[in-house]
Image (cartoon, rainbow over all chains, first blue to last red; front, side, top):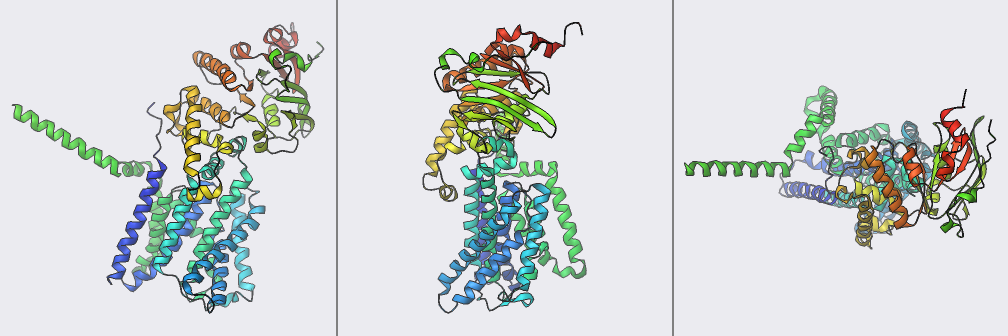
Length: 340
Length: 275
């Protein structure tokens, strides 16, 4: 019976994730406020948040639904353009406090609509086929945006108010985390994970597979859109070329590195993958080489069972047990000595 | 060669169910895969609390029948009435809502999920919480989850598996996985449960226990159970009506005693005398 694995309670695990994120935020926030953060560091804060949102939402389709999608950057770009165009149009009319949340909502909803439109043909497929078709759709979206007038074409979209701040981005990260974690631990999330584990059995349990695949796909698209709006409001110019398949692959790298189906993993690896290329900037020519090497090493480490065992040993509970056992044995020794 | 005349299908519905609408009424069901006729002219009726058996040599088309009944395959001919409703054109999940649940020959659990969550997936359609509740964990989410958990533990206790609720389904021993599949099917609140080789890989004492449990499930939940099984002691022990399938056709139908002495069945299993 030793082989039966007990699963940890998801609720505690989620609270730990939220706690980690909040503590990280507090530390960074204090650093920024006390003037201890360099300008370079500060410029990375919003991109980190954006990548966390993107990775966590992509994890919903890749990790929980179990479908490899390579068009996440496409949804991000749709959201970014929709949100930015909205903000530009409303800049004079609405105050920032109202305009920016609305812009994010608009961006998310437009991306979600695209999720439905693209999902209808794409979700007829599975596995490799689905991956390639989503890749193609991402590229189609990008080339359409480049060729449209009102999106600024290849030159990019200028004039978006720079509303993104670290605090706002962090709030959106929190909302994303809570929504996705809640969803995963619910009737709907169970249906989505059941489809991943066994589609035929899920259907035989009365789950409308088409609906739930679409649901996961659309929710992921929504948050990608919101992240896109944050992105668009962080830079002075929005250019469609940043949303190519390299961006989608980068997001996939984050999800795979963090562990598919692990929200906390996605958060941590989003931070690492965003900071790493910047931290290696001093290496100049060797930067991408070292980056690639670090990635390879991390992937191998993460996939190795020995490293997993080590992580198991290092977790809080195991450490506490070890300390208790040690103190108990030393007490026992002492007791023995006095007896002598 | 013996003439294969199936008995009229009403004959095997037990008397206690005879005056009620059958839970399952299959008429002239058939499917062709390309030029191959996998199942042909399959007629079968199940009473509301009947335990029925479907037996036959390997490749006879038994699992194909199950896949037809659950609309995994679309029949080429014939009709399936579940509780009097024709399932033509429905998808598998709709057929489940009508009242057909099943297990699989090669176990299909949600192996990365816990035992409890596997059963909760079975309870999917009876858990009342909408998308908004799922996302916010408000609006009756906790109540619905608590009810689902209680119900799931209750169902697991049928097989004394409630202590395994937190375990990962894929790490359970083989027999427990088979039992979990039955519990999950039961969770969908079916009118009829289709069990595809429930005793496969079980030892004789486990099989006996399973037999008692199947009977217990029928009695407590008042549902019909149809099973495919190669273990004759199980089939003859609990089935009230048995259909024998060979090359996609029913070659005999009747009570266990009738089946045991039917020359066509003996021939299908053991070959022709003197051949």
